[in-house]
Length: 284
Length: 288
Image 1: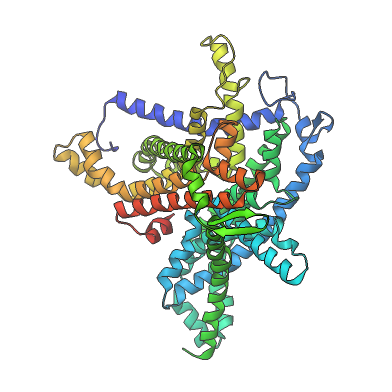
Image 2: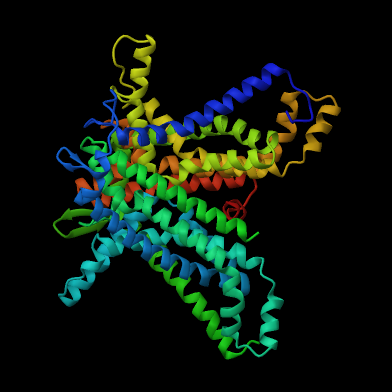
């Protein structure tokens, strides 16, 4: 079945119909989420009661819009805080890892590379509980030994950041290594010949070359951190990020304010996703 | 150039990765295993033993949920492959240029959106007062509202939806690298569509099929949101059980044993999948 080999028209139409149906299947859930954000009813379901923007800007109960719902605004702030840290850490460590794997040969490199890939095949829930168990036992030991409190090792934002960092770094490493592999080392040698220091050559030649990959992986890290649920669920303390807040509200039964948040999330993710693709395509 | 500074540079680069892997991956998993083999015999008193694992095998609810999760994940993986393969083939072989990029992007957009939002979308569609139920009533297919949420089929729809991208992308990549002239040659030599599919296309796409299946199976096995939200209270998913033991019951010892069993199953599947297709983790994962 390729364009150069003729096929019966009926087969062709069936195939096209299937592909169309598939894309409808893909688009349907997101479309209804967006549409019901504008429904003038307290339930995100039919019947359609007319168009409203109250779920974005409303101030009177029960129509309290996203921008006035304090719990949601606060959790967006929490998510942004976590995402910034995770993205910064993941990109920094990912860049170091890229240099290590591309530029250096050492004993155990293969083993270390496999270890680096492991977080990809560990389910998120397990990553979460293993970090929870480990940090709690460290905290218990330290508290027994010193008599002080170590709140940073109890469920809370620090653990959420560490938990998300533990697997997002693998993605950052893969993206940045792929770019570094395409770098022509003679450019750096030329800089060294012209009198640059080792660090100066890396900063002025290699890092600018890596920039598209660094930005792309930073954007993807922010996106993954914002959307992460499984690992976060196990490590979350009293400040909950957006996905956890939304999950709690969803379990209690939801108003279309969740649709409004989702619509905003969809828009932000689409923009960020496009950005990361643009940066990645520029590097080719 | 093997001066002291470059050795120093090497160790500076080695430090962050070791810190990351040892502190956040290796030690926590060893800790998890240690907790899973300790039994509580009194307040703050523990004894080493495999009692938690024994509890798993003697209590039917536990191992049945485990088996159910594994079987549902296998079914979800198979469905994803069957549904995703024609789409990947269409994108890779039957479209060119702009159409191809657009279709590929359209495939990816839903997956940049949080899983929570996607699942919420399915809840709006499938619930009793939802869109599909109303549409069916409007069309006169059914008389009253139909509840389509909170059953295994709803979980399956959600699982396939959540993971299909991870099947389509590796498939498109491998199918793209298959030269059209090979398929033409197959037709010239008198092959039928089925035999060409079986003897040329599928063997060529095998690496993509394997890496897609591994990723989809792992994602389904470790999924928490979809079974809980679409399957309702009685959905019985193993990750839900781990959550209950840890957060609700505060029985970390049993919860750790459950976690370890889930980890063992998912690692086993990855290992067997890679062995069967004679690939290594490095090439499979490095590609995506």
